[in-house]
Each structure stands twice: as C-alpha cells, then as structure tokens.
Length: 416
Image (cartoon, rainbow, N blue to C red; front, side):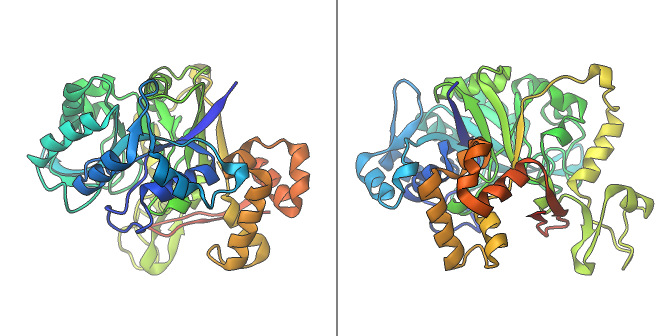
C-alpha cells in the first residue's frame, strides 16, 4: 500500500527566532531530501507570507493541495539528489498563540490550523486582524480563546480544522503544567466534538498520550515545528493512499488503518521539557523524585519546572488509569535519531561541520530520502551503509542511551 509522510506544523521566516532560509523554495528542497510529501505552509496568517503563498503556489483542483510554480520549483530542485526527487505538496496551515483569561486564570495555548484554501486563509486573516496584530509575528499572539478560534474556522469552512499544538508543553500546551487545562472538554467546551486530533510535541510520544483516557478518542499526530528547513521531518505523520486535503482530514477523523499509519518521533527524552528540572542549578529529576521533594529544587529550594512526563502522571491519576482489559490497539509509532545526528556521533564532529554535512549528502545520494531510509529500508539492505546502517538498526531496536531534557535544555539520545 502506498504511504507518504507529512509535516504540517512548520514556520516561515516571518516567525520570531526562525531562519531566514524558511522560504518556500527551501521548504520544497528539504521536503524532498527528508521524504516529506505534504508540508504545511505554516504562518498563513502573516500578510507578507500569505502574499508569497499566493504568488508562488498553485492549487491542484483534485487534491486541493498546493505546489510551487515551475520556475521556483526548478530552482529549488537544482541541488536535490536524483535519488530524492519527488513531488512536494503544500497544505495551508498556521499556528496561533492564544493568551487570554478564562475563569480568572491566564491561559496560554498554541493551536495549529488547517485550511482547504488560500481563500479560506484570507477570510481567517480578516477576522483575526479585527482582534489583534497579525503583522508582527508569523505566529500571532492574540487574546482569543481557542474555542472561539475553532468556531471562527468552522464558520469560514466546515472543513477547516484546529489541532491543539504540542499539547504538553508547560507554558503553551493545552495540557501544559503552567497554563493549560486538565482535559480537552475543559478547553473547548461545547465544540470539543470538532477536535479530532492533537499534536504530541517533541517531549511526548504516542504511548505517553495513550495513558490519558480522553486522548484515546482522538488521533495523535507529530510534526517538526521547525524553525529551520533542515529540521523538517524530525517528527512526522504517515498516511496511506493518495495525498489530498480530504484524504488527510478523513484519516485524522477516522483513524482508519487504510488511511492512517501513525507517527514518527524523536525519542521524547530528547525534548527540552521531558523531565522536571531547574536549569539554573543544573538539576533534573524524574517525576517521582520531584514529587517527593514537593516539586522544589533540592539545590536551591525554588520551584522546579514541571516536565511533560510529570504532567502525564498527574492527568493519568486524575482521569484514572486505563485497565488492561479496556486498552485498545493503536496506530504504529516509530522512533528515529536524525541521520545527521547519527553521523555526527560516529564521526565525532558537530552536526553543522563540513565532514558531517558531506557524509549526509553522500548517504542520501546513495539511499534516497532520509525518513524512508531510517524507517522503511529493509534490514538486509542496511548493511550496504556500513556503520551507519548498523546504527539505524540499533535505533529501530531501541538500543540507545538517553539523557532526558529538562527546563528548556534539550536531552541527548545516542546509539549504544
């Protein structure tokens, strides 16, 4: 059965703290190298980026996805190895940061929005511009309740979708420890039935999310949330069939095994909010030890930043652990260590070094796109890639060492 990878939560050069290379040509280029068939445009709410999308993209009448016009596509394809050349589709997407008060509590929630057309995005932008500033950041910060954002989207087009972003992130996740809620229903109220998917984020994976009862009723997806094009596909989602807006939406709504094939994730320990911690003191603790110390830093006595795993444990207790008899089967999930990190560890040079970058390009010139190499290449064929092939196999087998991330510090995952 034909499968394809998507990465729907990305950012353009108009978002803060992003690379100036986050333009359509670079996204088109890296999508092929990574093996991503459908890439989000990101930042569809930003007027300048929206103008670029309208100028450079063409919509396919059948799939309702977009692709680069011939001239910019030809330019972007020049440095893509022949082994990686493939069509790249774009879905109109964006992220909105909601900072607002509900019941006297300040909430900070990020939402990914999916739209079937640039016309729908234009209608959304008109409505959002009446609420706040959508010019200063590709991910606008608005005093808009996500429930009301969802209502707005559905009024524009019932096929628009809102996906709560990186739902466990302490400060900006729907279930985050700092300013989130304890359930999807609490956040979206009467419109909860229209939330059919949620994004795991870099510090959680599908099994962690499946520990929470209500998250078993929706589809879990993964995306890179990239701020630099080369990060594309570090987390991704896999589908079956022919890429189209409607097919992807149907897969997310139904979780049909004929359409949806689960997620691709970094090991969640690599995320920068996996464990509890206090960066100033260099202290990192698993939830049980942190709870035993009243969530205070053992070095200085100040409050620890509560990590994702801790928050999962809290909500699992609140919503009651799912008995084994009630547990259901779930779509597959795959863990990866990005190819450039594997090569960096083996060579002993930084990911950004010329030696690693050269080795990376040589590998994909031989093997083809990165994600299919890491996940799909048959075990017997990995031997042709020497030590790199051995490392890929070890990652698939879970033979890795982990130093979990905490309080904004990324973790480290290594083979062995």
